[in-house]
Image (cartoon, rainbow, N blue to C red):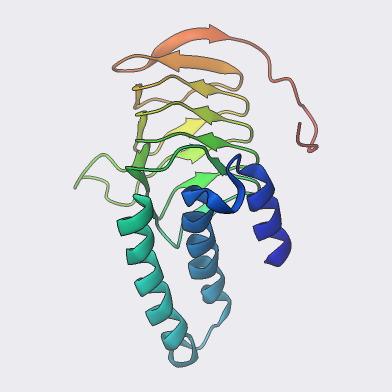
Amino acid sequence: MMTTLLEDLKAQREGLLGLGFWALSVYRFGHARFAIKNKIVRAPWTIVYVILHKLAEIFCGISIGSTARIGRRLSIEHHGCIVIHGNSIIGDDCLIRHGVTLGNTGYDDPFGAPTVGHRVQIGAGAKLLGRITIGDDAVIGANAVVIRDVPAGAAVGGVPARLLSSRAPAATDDEPR
Protein backbone atom coordinates (compact mmCIF):
# COMPACT_ATOMS: atom_id res chain seq x y z
CA MET A 1 0.00 0.00 0.00
CA MET A 2 2.89 2.38 0.74
CA THR A 3 4.23 1.98 -2.79
CA THR A 4 0.81 2.84 -4.20
CA LEU A 5 0.57 5.94 -2.00
CA LEU A 6 4.02 7.10 -3.11
CA GLU A 7 3.02 6.62 -6.75
CA ASP A 8 -0.21 8.57 -6.09
CA LEU A 9 1.83 11.36 -4.51
CA LYS A 10 4.17 11.57 -7.52
CA ALA A 11 1.17 11.72 -9.86
CA GLN A 12 -0.18 14.87 -8.16
CA ARG A 13 1.16 18.16 -9.48
CA GLU A 14 0.67 19.83 -6.10
CA GLY A 15 2.38 17.04 -4.15
CA LEU A 16 1.49 16.88 -0.46
CA LEU A 17 -0.47 20.11 -0.78
CA GLY A 18 -2.86 18.53 -3.28
CA LEU A 19 -6.24 17.86 -1.73
CA GLY A 20 -6.78 15.17 -4.36
CA PHE A 21 -3.90 13.22 -2.86
CA TRP A 22 -5.45 13.35 0.62
CA ALA A 23 -8.86 12.26 -0.59
CA LEU A 24 -7.26 9.45 -2.60
CA SER A 25 -5.27 8.39 0.50
CA VAL A 26 -8.48 8.17 2.52
CA TYR A 27 -9.98 6.04 -0.26
CA ARG A 28 -6.91 3.74 -0.29
CA PHE A 29 -7.21 3.32 3.50
CA GLY A 30 -10.93 2.58 3.26
CA HIS A 31 -10.42 0.10 0.44
CA ALA A 32 -7.51 -1.64 2.20
CA ARG A 33 -9.58 -2.29 5.33
CA PHE A 34 -11.56 -4.89 3.36
CA ALA A 35 -8.49 -7.14 3.55
CA ILE A 36 -9.54 -7.74 7.17
CA LYS A 37 -12.16 -10.47 6.70
CA ASN A 38 -13.49 -10.55 10.26
CA LYS A 39 -16.11 -7.79 10.55
CA ILE A 40 -15.58 -7.38 14.29
CA VAL A 41 -11.84 -6.85 13.88
CA ARG A 42 -12.50 -4.55 10.90
CA ALA A 43 -15.08 -2.42 12.80
CA PRO A 44 -12.61 0.02 14.45
CA TRP A 45 -10.92 0.62 11.07
CA THR A 46 -14.34 1.23 9.54
CA ILE A 47 -15.15 3.86 12.16
CA VAL A 48 -11.84 5.62 11.50
CA TYR A 49 -12.49 5.43 7.74
CA VAL A 50 -16.02 6.88 8.03
CA ILE A 51 -14.67 9.86 9.97
CA LEU A 52 -11.78 10.40 7.52
CA HIS A 53 -14.13 10.03 4.54
CA LYS A 54 -16.47 12.70 5.91
CA LEU A 55 -13.51 15.01 6.57
CA ALA A 56 -12.30 14.47 2.98
CA GLU A 57 -15.76 15.38 1.72
CA ILE A 58 -15.88 18.52 3.86
CA PHE A 59 -12.32 19.80 3.36
CA CYS A 60 -11.45 18.44 -0.08
CA GLY A 61 -14.86 18.38 -1.75
CA ILE A 62 -14.16 14.85 -2.98
CA SER A 63 -16.20 11.73 -2.28
CA ILE A 64 -14.77 8.37 -3.38
CA GLY A 65 -16.68 5.22 -2.46
CA SER A 66 -14.41 2.77 -0.65
CA THR A 67 -15.63 -0.12 -2.81
CA ALA A 68 -14.57 1.58 -6.05
CA ARG A 69 -11.61 0.02 -7.82
CA ILE A 70 -9.01 2.63 -8.68
CA GLY A 71 -5.77 1.83 -10.47
CA ARG A 72 -2.35 3.28 -9.87
CA ARG A 73 -1.24 6.89 -10.24
CA LEU A 74 -4.66 8.55 -10.43
CA SER A 75 -4.19 12.30 -10.64
CA ILE A 76 -6.93 14.53 -9.28
CA GLU A 77 -5.72 17.78 -10.75
CA HIS A 78 -8.16 20.16 -9.09
CA HIS A 79 -10.27 19.41 -6.06
CA GLY A 80 -13.91 20.17 -5.46
CA CYS A 81 -17.25 18.63 -6.33
CA ILE A 82 -15.81 15.26 -7.36
CA VAL A 83 -17.97 12.18 -6.76
CA ILE A 84 -16.86 8.64 -7.61
CA HIS A 85 -19.50 5.92 -7.18
CA GLY A 86 -18.51 2.89 -5.12
CA ASN A 87 -18.98 0.58 -8.12
CA SER A 88 -16.81 2.64 -10.46
CA ILE A 89 -13.64 1.19 -11.92
CA ILE A 90 -10.78 3.50 -12.93
CA GLY A 91 -7.63 2.28 -14.70
CA ASP A 92 -4.02 3.35 -14.27
CA ASP A 93 -2.59 6.81 -15.04
CA CYS A 94 -5.94 8.61 -15.34
CA LEU A 95 -6.54 12.31 -14.82
CA ILE A 96 -9.69 13.76 -13.23
CA ARG A 97 -10.40 17.47 -12.99
CA HIS A 98 -12.81 19.34 -10.71
CA GLY A 99 -16.56 18.91 -10.84
CA VAL A 100 -16.44 15.35 -12.24
CA THR A 101 -19.08 12.76 -11.38
CA LEU A 102 -18.79 9.04 -12.03
CA GLY A 103 -22.19 7.78 -11.00
CA ASN A 104 -25.33 5.82 -11.67
CA THR A 105 -28.34 6.86 -13.70
CA GLY A 106 -30.81 6.77 -10.82
CA TYR A 107 -33.12 4.44 -8.97
CA ASP A 108 -33.53 2.07 -11.92
CA ASP A 109 -29.89 0.93 -11.67
CA PRO A 110 -28.38 2.13 -8.37
CA PHE A 111 -25.29 -0.08 -8.73
CA GLY A 112 -24.53 0.75 -12.37
CA ALA A 113 -21.35 2.82 -12.58
CA PRO A 114 -18.73 3.64 -15.23
CA THR A 115 -15.65 1.61 -16.06
CA VAL A 116 -12.81 3.90 -17.12
CA GLY A 117 -9.79 2.50 -18.98
CA HIS A 118 -6.12 3.39 -18.62
CA ARG A 119 -4.68 6.87 -19.37
CA VAL A 120 -8.10 8.51 -19.66
CA GLN A 121 -8.39 12.28 -19.19
CA ILE A 122 -11.69 13.57 -17.81
CA GLY A 123 -12.34 17.28 -18.22
CA ALA A 124 -13.74 19.67 -15.64
CA GLY A 125 -17.44 19.27 -14.95
CA ALA A 126 -17.82 16.05 -16.94
CA LYS A 127 -20.49 13.56 -15.88
CA LEU A 128 -20.06 9.85 -16.67
CA LEU A 129 -23.30 8.10 -15.86
CA GLY A 130 -24.45 4.49 -15.81
CA ARG A 131 -22.92 1.17 -16.84
CA ILE A 132 -20.69 2.60 -19.53
CA THR A 133 -17.15 1.78 -20.59
CA ILE A 134 -14.57 4.41 -21.44
CA GLY A 135 -11.74 2.95 -23.56
CA ASP A 136 -8.03 3.41 -22.96
CA ASP A 137 -6.51 6.80 -23.93
CA ALA A 138 -9.92 8.46 -24.31
CA VAL A 139 -10.43 12.16 -23.62
CA ILE A 140 -13.69 13.37 -22.10
CA GLY A 141 -14.27 17.07 -22.74
CA ALA A 142 -15.21 19.63 -20.11
CA ASN A 143 -18.87 19.57 -19.09
CA ALA A 144 -19.58 16.51 -21.25
CA VAL A 145 -22.41 14.23 -20.18
CA VAL A 146 -21.39 10.72 -21.17
CA ILE A 147 -24.18 8.12 -21.17
CA ARG A 148 -22.83 5.75 -23.85
CA ASP A 149 -19.61 3.77 -24.25
CA VAL A 150 -16.59 5.68 -25.55
CA PRO A 151 -14.12 3.77 -27.75
CA ALA A 152 -10.41 3.67 -27.01
CA GLY A 153 -8.52 6.73 -28.26
CA ALA A 154 -11.67 8.78 -28.81
CA ALA A 155 -12.38 12.35 -27.74
CA VAL A 156 -15.97 13.17 -26.80
CA GLY A 157 -17.76 16.31 -25.73
CA GLY A 158 -21.15 17.94 -25.46
CA VAL A 159 -24.50 17.20 -23.87
CA PRO A 160 -25.08 14.37 -24.47
CA ALA A 161 -21.49 13.58 -25.39
CA ARG A 162 -20.76 12.86 -29.03
CA LEU A 163 -17.63 11.71 -30.81
CA LEU A 164 -15.32 14.63 -31.67
CA SER A 165 -12.31 12.68 -32.90
CA SER A 166 -10.96 9.17 -32.85
CA ARG A 167 -7.43 7.82 -32.93
CA ALA A 168 -5.82 4.50 -32.20
CA PRO A 169 -4.49 4.18 -28.63
CA ALA A 170 -0.84 5.14 -28.47
CA ALA A 171 0.19 2.52 -25.89
CA THR A 172 -0.67 -1.08 -26.65
CA ASP A 173 1.35 -2.79 -23.94
CA ASP A 174 1.06 -2.65 -20.16
CA GLU A 175 3.76 0.00 -19.83
CA PRO A 176 2.46 3.40 -18.61
CA ARG A 177 3.41 6.39 -20.67
